[in-house]
Image (cartoon, rainbow, N blue to C red; front, side):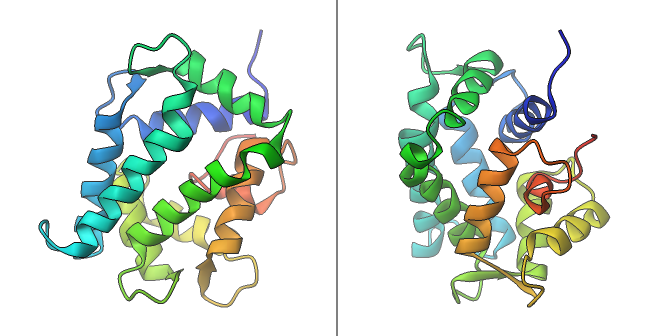
Length: 185
C-alpha cells in the first residue's frame, strides 16, 4: 500500500525530528533540537534564554510526543508516530493544547529578538540549525509560504495554522505543507 500525501508529510516530520537518525524519537532528540535552536539564536549555553528553549522542547516531548509511545519503551517508532499523528485527524481540537506546545517551542527557540514572532532571518537560522538536511533556498521558499499575510514575520497564529495544515490537510496547495520544507506531491 502506498503512503498518502499526509502520511508522507508525517514521515518527513518524523525524519527531521529524529535528530540522531537512529530511527526512533526520544527525549534526547528534543534536547538536541533545543541545543541546536539555542545556538542558532545566539543564546549562550548557560543563559536563561537557552534554558527557556530547552524547557520548551522538553515540554514538547512530555506533552505531545511522549504520549505517542504506545509500548512504553521511552522511544517513539515511526509507526507509533504516524499512527498517533493520524489520530489527530479524528479529534484535531482535542490536540489544540498539545499543538500549542509545539508552536511555543518553535517560536521561543527561534525568536532571537524576543518580539513574539519569527522574521525570515530568524526562521532561516532556526531551520538551518535544527533541520540541517534542508538547504537555505528551500527554507527561504518555505518561509514565503508560511508567512500567510506576507508581512515578513511568522506569528504564533500562523505557526499554529501551518502545523495543523501540515499534519492534517490533504490539500496539496495548502501553505502549511511547507512547514518542514518541500514535500513531493
